[in-house]
Amino acid sequence: MLTRVEGKIGSPEKPLSDLGLISYRSYWKDVLLEYLCNFGGKELSVKDISQEMAINSYDIVSTLQALGMMKYWKGKHIILKKQVRGHGSDVIEEYVERMKRRGSVYKEIDPLCLKWTPFANPAPTPS
Image (tube, rainbow, N blue to C red):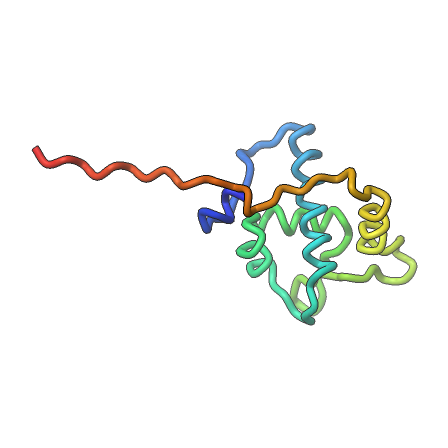
């Protein structure tokens, strides 16, 4: 949320520990699947997702690949919202079901409650 307010793209310091990767991947998975659930258009780019979500493109691509939602086809990487028949269950449908089961227990941060101003170096005083 802070990187979004600053208008920057964020990523954790690398290399991540095993536990750090599990934690970040879980977060990225949830926010990306929520984004894809609410995306109404036909085409989107990783760059657009990165700028809107303030998540580094590499982190988006690696998460989508781990979910089996990114394929290389006809010279391009494409994001699959629906799984190909015979290749496992639909990741987005599983996410929606998980969110229903989670119910009101899951707490979200309200961006309107964030009271933060980026640090700005004070202008040097003339001598």
